[in-house]
Length: 499
Image (cartoon, rainbow, N blue to C red; front, top):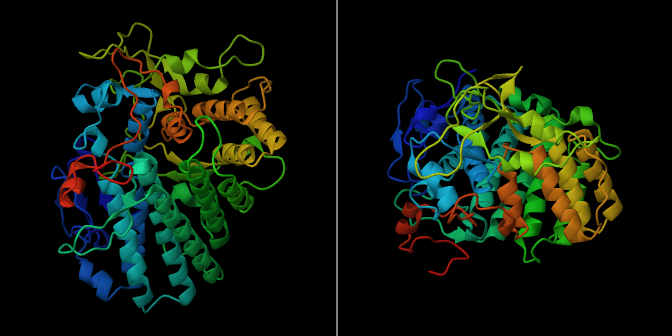
């Protein structure tokens, strides 16, 4: 498959090369950090103007391929950075001090670790907007095909905005990203407004999917989206993303620490889930892995999954508390099956990885992205899985007072995924939220920074151990310094911060 966006792991935060017209348009969408080097090459002889002014079926199809490609660029960064803040794992490579120091000792710098997972997301959003603007002008696409193309671009936008708001939370984010270079930078909007934008965008995507229901997607669907390769199944994916955004939005509203959020948004999430790829009725554990994924490969010039670190690797390590916090399986001798499947000791005889200034020894490795027991840099990274949908439904059930249904869903996951005894604790909202956070922690370990994100959402970041003397668990990732400077705001800037 022709890839549009190339970035090697070694150049993760420094170099980007744009090889198709869809990605030539990133000129000052926002203000990007000076350390990013935008190499605007045109090896395929397609200019941005040819895409925007005279688009064709082929050029727009290639641009959509670029959208899928751009989605995955920060996927690994998002996981290990949020995973570091949530004490799931740590980067002990020692080749970039902020990467292991800032999430543990703080503060998060607005120009180093804390400035990550921002610019590339806006690149992907801007690329989606270019496709949305160009598609109506394509002469050799049917109306239904144009609707489907627009829907995919809109869904990508929503996914990237969701990643942005999860990291910046109450700081908010700009949502108007089509400003020309000479214009005043787009203003920040509130956290709730970002969620409103996500939900509106997904609603529009479904409208277009309905309009295009009689057609097929006029471009290749990547393998990671193979379960959603028709308008009907892709619609189910948009409903799943809607449910995820709604549960997050529920907890963005003021609510007591450790308690569920807005019952209104939770009720809407339950409605969305009923139309997603989580059908009503008894769930099936055989479907736990069903979902959408970011693809990676070892092909020439393609992006590899940098989280697939070998057992002898010196980069990513799990913290010992992931094992010590795990509950015991049925029988009482083994820990949670999810912990056993996802974390293993370094090989016998190997020395722990240690770097100066960090009192954490690397002795446990993640096998989340191993295939057949071996590291696989082509292993996909989940975007959203069936197992997570069950837990999203459990959260929404807790938030709407459907206690028995919530316990049933929590038990289904803990018994079938963790091989744990049935939950026997209290059924108060606070107790069930604690249980929910445990199940989400182990079911989604090293997949999306869930432990930190949930602790932030439920106002219980103080339950995450600092893990190092004088340590600090960050409450939010800051806005990059360059964004603040462009608006003449002090750092950090954004909604919810006094300026």
